[in-house]
Length: 362
Image 1 (cartoon, helix red, strand yellow):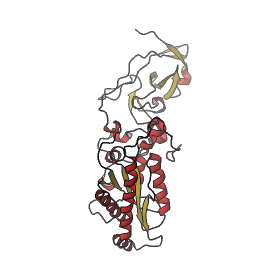
Image 2: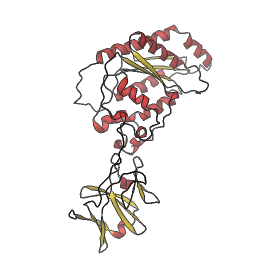
Image 3: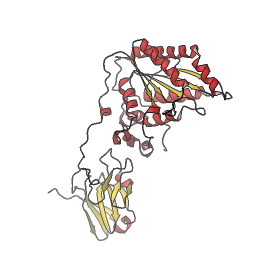
Image 4: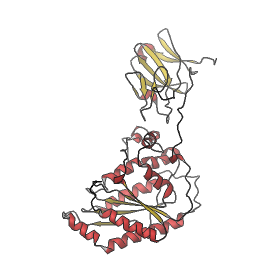
């Protein structure tokens, strides 16, 4: 039997006032709880990604709920909920002369539930082949009765041009994918925002995996098309980029750049103005992910704030050879830059950390 290692926790009456608290004793994080006249002590570090269990919530049935991703362990046994073969360590407690003590030699050892390695955790390696271009349409519409989209129409012209230049290309319509909104894990802690995204790890049906796969592993060029909605990109665009915070956060938390030697370009159309602000947001975000841009990185069209006759806007885009030529030229510029980057021997040992994020509640 391992030798006991008792440490003082504090006055019993004071400790009773908090149902759950995170404590650091002898360098060891503990989740100390008190309910129904009984103290409990389990590891204060969640098995998932190390969230502070003692800073979470104590459920009515005695399970400690991690504040980061809601993993749950019983406050007395350390066991996960029934059916999940996992547990955090449990620690013995004793009361002497109104004081509480903990034995830092664990009474039980942690158990990790077996789970398959997520495909997105694999090492990034570009597979041999021609340049690859993915177009992402962020237009929202009725799936049953889809409408014409000016931005997606121009995106098609860009992808067709890429294909004619010998590149592989594919289109992703965000409107066709079922994926959840970002749940703001970064707002809890930078380390709570993980790669792969915690939502993707939890839900195998989350279809944003297609976007992650394309941007991080498959594509050399990413072309993003959006409408202008009240002077900003579409809400579906923002739903996507909020979930992509996990890509940028790998730099912040692990010094790991997932986007290397990749090019981004943008197609922006709308019935109102503010093209520069939309392009600026998109360039800033994709630049923070690690993308580089060609000269003249976006093609845009707007008839201005007062142009309420949207049917005229559609007719103008449909009939504009200039806009199609512009998006084709954008594709060519992106491919030209990508051609110089593919196979680059860029050093990967020293990473320049990106700027501070503008997301979250901190």
